[in-house]
Length: 333
Image 1 (cartoon, rainbow, N blue to C red):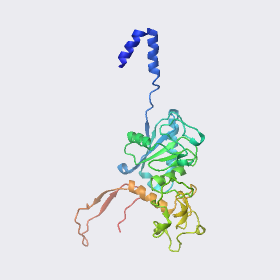
Image 2 (cartoon, rainbow, N blue to C red; image 1 turned 45 degrees about the vertical axis):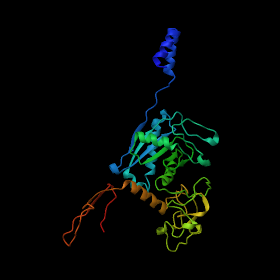
Image 3 (cartoon, rainbow, N blue to C red; image 1 turned 90 degrees about the vertical axis):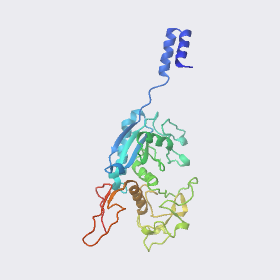
Image 4 (tube, rainbow, N blue to C red; image 1 turned 120 degrees about the vertical axis):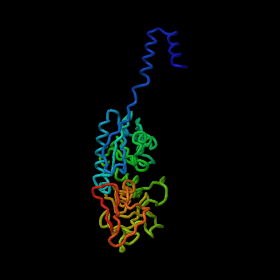
């Protein structure tokens, strides 16, 4: 029934006072208007259209925690890009922070029967792993596409101090004191396609060794990272040969949720323990992935289609314009 017809019926069947009360109820029932999303820039890259466009999204922050989110997001990004392999690429990072208010703060903790009403359904304990913090990726991607459609990478910052995070289509991290290191690790998944090097069993994880930092026993020869292995290093590599967390590069058993049959490049690495540095193999994968997304050859002269002849004293000048970077130069051999 149309609204005018409903109101007419009320006027015929109720007093003015009752009608006024009903109108007031109609105003109150829908609740307050939805809070608009807010996008703020955190960093501006120097590569313009070539920049890696990163968007940090709030989850489990209420409307009253708007300022707290933007401050936490800025601190998180500054911490991540302060060290390599991210530091070199920091000039190419354009970072926005997107605030989307939640009705309640925090995240779900199913193991403790604790539930909150948040926009992107953040929850710990996904897949039966207590520290695995996930969100509804589809909802997040839709919100970012609406507000920042040119995004390359999404990071969700969850307003919960419990240790946790995850990688994949989006990277997720909590506000734990180790959030910066957690996010570096999770970006290893999202950016570099790297595998976890834990030995803890995860039966739900698919089998295989497609990632650049793991190899099964069947794929030790040739080893995917053989270029980093000294000729004197045995494969497989006994852990007793470890000089420190990163040396020597070899094939150490225990990775990808298996204690046997899967091998990792270094004694330890941030993909195995947050207290370890990036090993050479994982760092190379991260550098290659970020360069692939942000480094562009903008123009070349002469053009590729030109027929070039060069004789002594009569050679054309070859030039290449690439994405600008304060420490990047092109040398001709």
